[in-house]
Length: 72
Image (cartoon, rainbow, N blue to C red):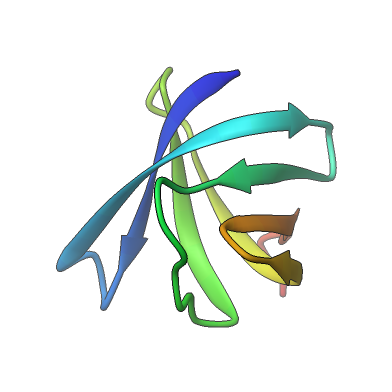
């Protein structure tokens, strides 16, 4: 499990989360409480790397996201 941050509203808002699972193509994120996320958002890893993400599924406070490529 790794800490991360989700940027919302054109990077005006920030929500902390935990990465439960990570692959080259996406991640499973857990939030402290239930969240309403937009379809796409930026995820900042602990290393500082930022991934553009698309929500693929959600259940309670856990979300599965796909990392988008530069041309998406």
